[in-house]
Image (cartoon, rainbow, N blue to C red; front, side, top):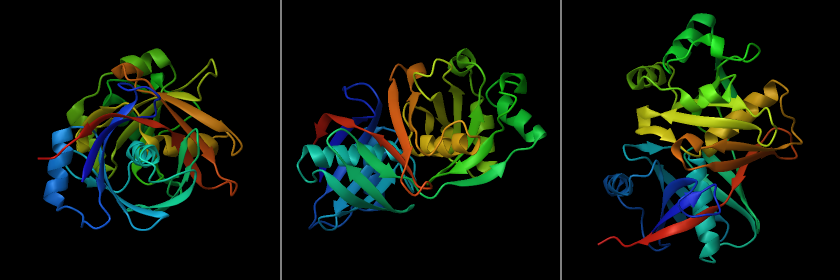
Length: 286
């Protein structure tokens, strides 16, 4: 196995979102789940991806947080294919990532890695009492929410609660009640919450913060699947269109600013998330 640490959704090391990338040799079997969990826990990043080449165009990927296996992780997938490109294992072209969330098309070009999200779904729309409970978990109240946007659970591979915030200063400064957020995540069967504020200056589509303490991530500085879900959410409100290339700024509150891109494919349904990753460390397992 070859082990790398990457900084995803950034062109510089020590910025963006860190992910572990473990390359399982073609002739090797996947390690045991216990070993993969131990490696992910030792690396201590929000996700570590274990990738194995199945043939020239197909790569199987399994994803582990420090506590459990998850179906999909956007920034770890971007890290995987950026690493494979750097090692000349892949070149410009189309590939398939076999994941527990399904088979996803990956486009490797010279500038970015683009990955398909799972088919977008609105899974739940919250009522007023539930909305008050959601905002209180972040020590906020509904007066700090935009009047025309309602929190929803959206899935593009993983389920997230999408929570709109009217003012970026509020987004930057909220504090979560960790036990409440964990309780709500269990109640609604989601990974966590993705809070956002639209960029009034239009430099970015939105500023975001991602909170997922249920799976061991108090906050994450770049989240591909969640911004895929946010893309679908914003399109449903006609804030963006299927022709736009969107950019989401995340991680500023953590001093690890990341930029995540998204777009719709020509079918007008499938969402792609895009970005790059750089290798910051190469590790050896003794």
